[in-house]
Length: 356
Image 1: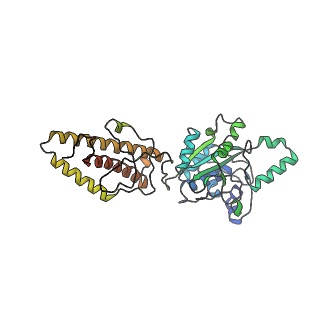
Image 2: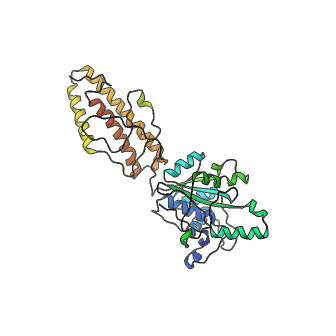
Image 3: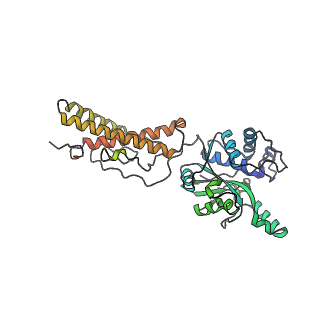
């Protein structure tokens, strides 16, 4: 998915309609519109002018076009994101921001452009700005200008950084610039070099939207335990704990597909086997103890996996609906089934069973 530019050149509704350019102080609200749109997976797609309108509603301040009067802060950006239907929070670390972006979030990046920037093309407008100050006051180039940008990550295109001075009506500037993570961090460090913040992540906002349920950030997936039984393994792979003690450990991360499902045939086969074993346990104290041990391990496997997947989603428990809830439930059920399948295997002596 390509990251769409929401250009501050057209932040005024009339300018947007007529296609006339202007450049003032609407970078924050343009970037809010770009970030929320990206975070929603473009289930909503706001213009820069709509970002300005959301800012006015959020803050009660009026933006007078043609006047440099509405520069914004990260706090006001978070308020504006909320009006647009998204959620914004401050990054806890650079790694926190990267993980969130790789789970589908957008990043708002407050910069001092272009101090310490990598060799990338920002925009035609910035080129004109640079030429002007080179001729009139070269020292100003070292000072740069306070600015708000945004960025996103996807598997197809990697990192994309969006400066709102780009012209969305020109094909060459319609989308964000492809950058590496190192280059993006150089951009974020511009405020550090300008001595505006102490560390790079202090100038970042993480933006999410309920229109797109973010999957956990890509991490090393747990190894699936070998299951020799005939029924196919569930479609969501998780590590089944090998013992009651191991089941207490919360997995470091799981990978959830966009539409999580549970293999119904495998589930039914496993449950039928469980019922048969329970019936066979009548009058057999040892069998009952095995059933209790397996049930506890299955329950703890389900809970630990559900917790790991929920934490990976990066949303409040009160916002866990739709695909997110299905992802948590399906992962928990799959983890429990793997434990029960191991218990049903007569060649597996983990629960004290022996083939008769």
